[in-house]
Length: 161
Ligand SMILES: [Zn+2]
Image (cartoon, rainbow, N blue to C red; front, side, top):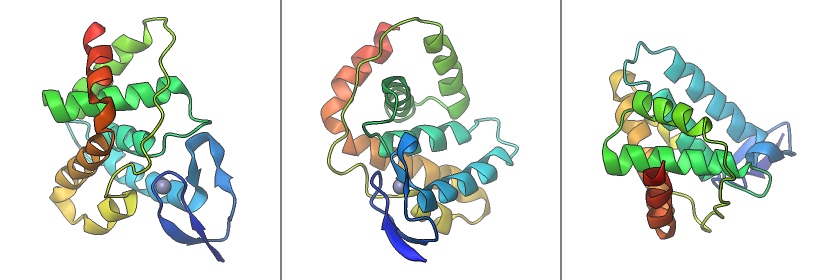
């Protein structure tokens, strides 16, 4: 076991795998935590589909050179719709489906040096039953705030479609 630092969120975790999952700009140990949270959110009978916020917060927090521009753009648009427009995860999912039909080159957003004060580990350790929606929304907010220099272009992009 060795400690690896996740390049996306900065989490330092013990892991047998010291390499990085380049596609997600994340350590494998961090990816495992994301899988754990995803399993949890997907297993909730959740009309709001809060799972979508998990996907978008994680992706925007782990934006990196090998992450596809469309993934980063969609995740930021998702965070914008949730944080600034009050969308639920379900509404964001529908917006993403509508966006995906637009054949377009998506701009590349390069991440700020710090991508949020909360990590997937903070969300997981704080969950006790019904509070998971708030934990995940707080996480989404912290990531969205970290991208503050891009709020305007992301809003313009979202509103154009
Ligand atoms: Zn991470």
